[in-house]
Length: 579
Image (tube, rainbow, N blue to C red; front, top):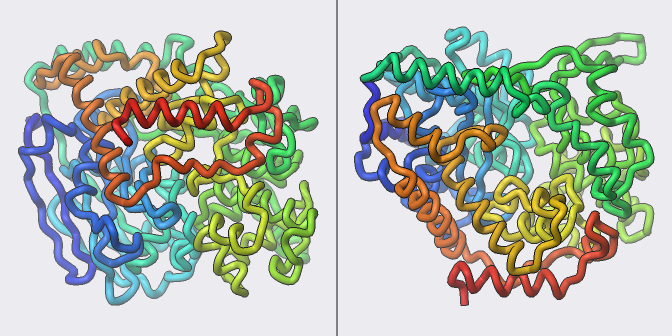
């Protein structure tokens, strides 16, 4: 029977090759799971003033109390001290991982220490095996996944998580791949795992759960399932997916193009969601426990040898990848974008941050700010071949320039020049929206500097024009609500119909009593806990340090002024109690 109060935390020590399971009854009421649970566990385990790659630093994975029990409750939250920014690192991934954690009986996994030698883990509901990873240390993501898949049985009730060469070489924006097509993409989790000599892990599941009122549970499940599949609420995500955003953003001048020298891409139609679907879409997938099918997979045939040797591979695409490796780089060729995505994902890099880095390199070379002898290439907007050449150097790091660029792009730009056109916000690469003040301020001040923290881009695109105070109010309100949703680990695509009343009913159907007021209080608590955690890391709330380019290029709301952002920050600091 499902237990409403006790959370099961798997604790793994890589150095000592030990594991234990802690049963915690003190966390559920205040933090639920997901983001809330991970935030609290990070606070308990992190060395706030130590380097992010210190062996003692934890990697935390958490699911929520409704995970795999209802449609679209499918994500796993990863939390850590970010090697890229030095502060709060958080990223989410789907496919099978959340399902296998639930069916293995774990609400969270905490991994600490550094293995003496490269290792991967086999995790079940009963044990953790520490297995030799040296034979495939250095291998790309697909090859490592194949090795782990063959070595550990489990079939569909199994999830395979691993890093690529970028994580092994401690690239600050390396990612972690989950089951081939999903990623813990942002803020450098891959390099933290690489620093621990942890190539990855396999979770295999075999548990099942029962509920006090199985008929009530089934009825609510079917109601939510029908909302997902028989209404228009999620049709966008199933049909074209998030690439549907390309044309609308381009029309309003909010599609970042050629390192944000413009908000309009003349060739937007050729990289639109419609164009991808008509010409290269091969299939759609869903995360385990979700009927929507929002994961869009393209078929890419490419030649890997001059002797006309070809292979056909499956490549996942979405709006953020099309922006970062398409319009931002001036690439209008779908095949070129897919080749970049494929290369980046095999190396295990964060595609969005890599796109920002490539765009900065291109403008740096073209303006003469950067030297060709340092870059060892001459990239130009639209030149896919040159970008692919650079990808390998981000990992091999053949000189001091690439060592610096791989570790921290902002510090690299401070040293070599061009910081004013490096499109990062507090260390994290920009998302694909140049919509106005709310997005710029929202990503900059969000708890993990992601557009998903508070969806400022959505506020900018509303017909009404808001005052600075109104925008700040909306941003804070949205982030608190999302703290609750991501603690339940409900996919944010489902946020429109998973309102508080439905969440209360979902809890009740599995034997848990929660009120609207209790849930709102939990969201509020987690929001402020994250602010306190950032303070402990030494985060500077006053200096936003936004690059000049964001104020130079027209947005969908016109040219942005620094004084408005400064006014918004003053209001924000007052509201969150920072003097």
